[in-house]
Image 1 (cartoon, one colour):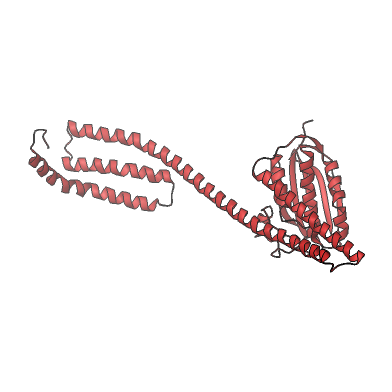
Image 2: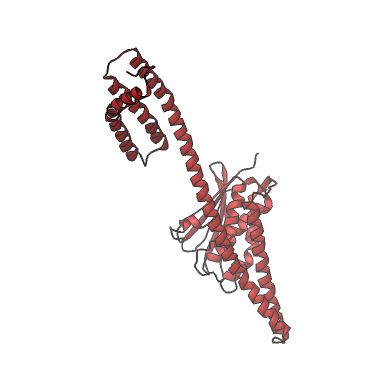
Length: 349
């Protein structure tokens, strides 16, 4: 027993005698704790912190018992009670801290993943849009130079070049409008003026607006409804959603195919579906349909007569607008094509 009035040399001598016994009884506890930590390396952080707290407490307790020779006196009993109280306090705190740190770690990991995904999406968007902008600009410049140099002089040829320039300019304007709309959605700057909007008017206007494209592609567009619900939303944004879905369906439906627009009510929400005959989307790509600049094809050059082709932003914009209305949008393969479904909250009666 170390006495308070011992000299320093006597104190060191006592430590020298105590050290082997303390190590002999405490080291196995520490090694066991290390093995337990290794076994828990893939488990929860709360479990790891609990073991980290218990190992030194148990090692101290066993070390004191070993050095005392299990001779229970007042001092040893007090020491045991203190160790027990320390364990009762530190273990719950370790569990709470472990859970808090684990939640923060998961949140930080998810935030980093979101940042990486957003950065990759931005890089992909810039690369794809740069290519899509370059193509019509090159065509406009070449045709303008031909007109300026007098290479094209016949009135019919001049009119044809002017029409093609106008078409390319319209396509560029549509792409810029899509980029502006997407930037508003992603920046959270989209402000909706909600009102009661009849889906009958939205669908009929969208089908009429896409009729020229449907005739050009020789695609039938059919609209039907079990009922025509009234939804709570913003008329211009909802019209854009339906136009984007219908035009996307027409572009991917082969000639003499059919695009079916169906409207009804399901589970207390308005349900609008657009079915096409695109042949289906590969299962490994269906989760990317609403990604920015996704087109479902490796060819980035628009098809012939593709003044209607966009920059692959239509479905991404539709998804953002639907979610801004507190609705849901999804897609699945059905039959010989795809089925896009939009669910929107009904207007209050």
